[in-house]
Length: 282
Ligand SMILES: C[S@@+](CC[C@H](N)C(=O)[O-])C[C@H]1O[C@@H](n2cnc3c(N)ncnc32)[C@H](O)[C@@H]1O
Image (cartoon, rainbow, N blue to C red; front, side, top):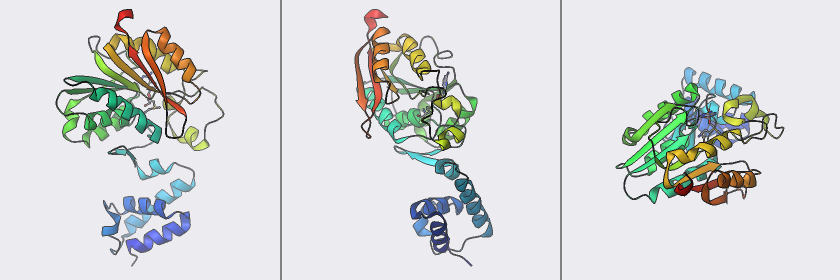
């Protein structure tokens, strides 16, 4: 018989990474807390599951998809190849959206465009007050929305504040909706870009990554139409590429936003574009 502890050790030896081995074994043995089951025996089925995960990892599939889950802020999200793997810099984008939404003292409406796994929108739903918060989440990909719905089911009571719609940017957003904050991490890589890691290009959905020849197609479209769905003084928060700050700043000004600002992420890269809707130009 093999114990869970022995399985971790042998997997760590194969992978050369103890932490990854622990994560994989935790999933293979379906344990919430690995340290509580270290001395238990494993079954053949657990070993087969682990072997299959290690095999997938060795072919280059990202760890997050192999595990089928990934942490984002306070959430443990289900992820698979239908959605982008949530990134640490996007946790900061969500944090900025939450910061602005918290400034709204009574009823607040927020929209997460291109929600993917639901990372940003579900963070808003769980971190903003339960009462008086309405969260709208959209994606053009029905596959992505299936993943987001699975994650919605996991957040408990805040799920009651969430509406998900299949929509290309604002196309199916109700015309009368007026938000305090619109946030999006849209696709922003130029089609044909050569700076993309192989595993990203091979495994993550192209629709989540690429947008036009300059990478600005989705950003441009969102900035152009966001004002119609923002309350006077409402805020647009966008994740952008590290080299897109000046282009995005210009777009914000061109389409009537004020107080435009670019914040850097924890890696020191320009990453978060913010604009306030100037109702005077609406
Ligand atoms: C970079 S991913 C972000 C996913 C998630 N919000 C996150 O931060 O991890 C971009 C998302 O935008 C969606 N998307 C692409 N084109 C879209 C469109 N025209 N309308 C709405 N969503 C779109 C993709 O399906 C994808 O889920």
